Amino acid sequence: MRQADFTVGGLYAYPTFNPHDGPPAAAQVEVVTIDGGGQVTVVVVDPGPKPKHSWQKRPRRNERLQLATRAVSCPWDQWEERAAAEAAEEVEREARVSTWRQDYEQRRVDRVSPDPHRVLPTKYDETREYLSDEEPETLAALVQAYIQHRGLGQRVKREKIEPLISQFPVTIARDIIAALSPPEDCAADSVAAVFRRTADILEDSRISNMSRRGRNRHDYPQRSLIGEPELTFVATVRDHFAATGDELRLPWVPRMPEWLDDEDRVLAETFGWLRVGVADTGGQLIHSVGCRSVNSRSLEHADHIPLWAILVENKRLLCSVCGGPGFRDLVPLAEFIAAVDVWSARNRDSVEPWQRIALLRLIAASAYARAAAEEPEVTLAGRITETLGVAPPGREGWQAYHLLNRSTQTVLDSTDDDDIPTVDEENILALCRTRLTLVEQQLPNTMRPDPLADSANATDIRRRYRQLHDTIEIPGLDRLLFGLPGAI
Image (cartoon, rainbow, N blue to C red; front, side, top):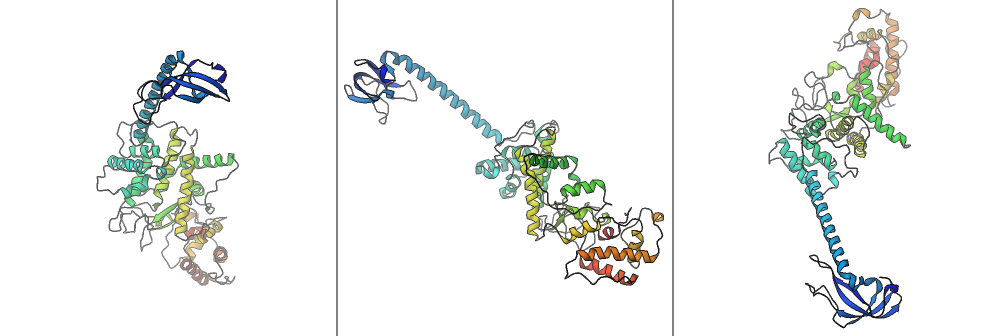
């Protein structure tokens, strides 16, 4: 109350305590003097009801007190109505708190309860609550849900499952788990349908880490996983950063040769930096780590190379059983595929922060794998590929190729031998010298041989060609050197 509202001798209500199970209590006080400065002196007429607990204090009858005017609630004849109103407000507040607690508990349970039939949310949590930042109980609940939905049994160690989902936001990890064993009747807009590819990749990652006496037999995701949606998604994310004055630079990839298929060239320009795992083998064929034809180390410990190196390689050298090396960093790849599939399912309207982060994490994972292999971003093989890819020879390159491989069994054949023009040997030797010199110019001084003389004959050039093959490993070197249009 304000000081001007007090009168000497008037009776007022002085609140004493507020029990949780009843209306607030107040003492009846009589104003003795108005002291000014927001203070009044009162005497207690009726101390009011006795508190239930010792820590709840009340004044004694006839006790003289000096009170702040704001500590007095209202005139005594208005107290009953005021107390009833405050009690009603307290009941309403308790009801709101109870409803909030129930909603919170429901949301907490819902966050760790996978439902394959759940409709894909129009927007995921913008707070980006990643499992790595959550309480251990949340991660433990989702790990258990993963084991149950996949039917793995209780012998599966939790430590094997945690790395698969710990980098996802909570609600996205929940929906991915729901896609591990989708029912046949799930709708196209359900989380089970949208996250199906992501769930498969996570299972691939889990299997790749299983110890089977050091051997794995499994088909890992290959370049067919990347298509138009993934390419367009990357372009959309780069446009988002460009709109704010930033620039997202993808890892360096050499300019692809002109003879490469348009589809592979576009793939290499955007995703050529992705790492693919190469199986251990003593033969010429290139296998996936999980190929049934070879025994290899696990995907985590096997050798790996950039995707662009596979795209320019001779297709005959890729194993026909497994199709060639598959992607290596599967968990970041799964997060990226989840971002793309959600974006596509929402009609490509907008990209949420967690989706942009997924692309950045995939780039970072690839860079980390390359650093662990002590491989610089721009390699000798990449520079030679870029140099030789410009203005490659035409059909006459076939004559140069056959000339240098005259005494050996060639790997490449032409789809139309009749179309190869007849060129005199001197011009063919000049072409060979020019192309080999381009390669040698990219070599460091410690590896660079003396230049070929203009008078070098076929034997000298053939010897230099084989020396070059033995010195450096360049994917698809023969086709890079000679173009070889129509090669099979």
